[in-house]
Image (cartoon, rainbow, N blue to C red):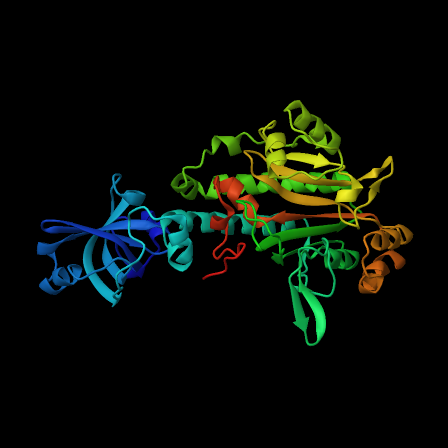
Length: 430
């Protein structure tokens, strides 16, 4: 007998198959029992007619509890009214492990209740759909880079110095030395790019921000790319091509998941290249037009990003931010040293920044000056300065936050649902 995944049942209509999974729900109507099974790829209804099976099997059905693990055997039939469009006429069943009374029932539960049971909440169709879309996004990005001759060069998680500033670092003891959990792989990416040309890294990053918003996590995953001989415009073009590629992949391959989430896909379908571009100064003008009291030189908060992005139906690049609010390695604009050759990509529908990037300083003296201005210990960055001593070239890069991208493409209200086990302010259980 063929063991099949629920998502592939359409390939086995009329055949007797075996499904290995868990009991999502069960209901009985007299002499017929309806078993909803899940296996991680989808749901299917098993129809068991008691007079057509053994007494032992009929008795077993009466003992089943939600989330008991089962091996179900039966004949696949087309049934448009059933979940997934197919059902299984049950011919046999094996109980692998009975479940105790399951805490997450099919009634409404509060978010705090579900968050405390995240290890079980993941089993629900909605969370399953989100995780599958996240996986598709990650695969799409990897393929996008692979097709363009990028090399995956993983950056370290433990670092001796700050990358994005010293106020949001998780400090740890590295055998008697002070070390930190990585805020970004970018500095190491620059070194790898000088060796390999075009590279990216993909891994967890950590920010000890005292932020309790729907957009913030203490631990999140980033795709970070770095490219030798790329200027800011090259960088922006690569980013928009990547995002457009990802959107098309999700629309093509995650139709069922997007339907489960009731996502309005029309908003994604109408996004085309190129994405709109505005300067930081133009963005400030939008805020003032909307009556926001905002001073040029301040950084945008979530409400500001929402107002700006609502002017556009597609992601929008905001470029040339003031140098004083950007990292020390950002290259000043040759035409205006008060701003840098960097850009953030704001997602539409109020999801805020999903990418931050820019051109890096490639001049040794200027980089040394910026490190001093930021009161950073130069000795910790001596290796980084070597990249400017030995064959420096113009180069650019960016970092994309996976969780915010997932939230946007899935249409989620809170970022906590975008990662299997979120780490938020004062919350790290389970």
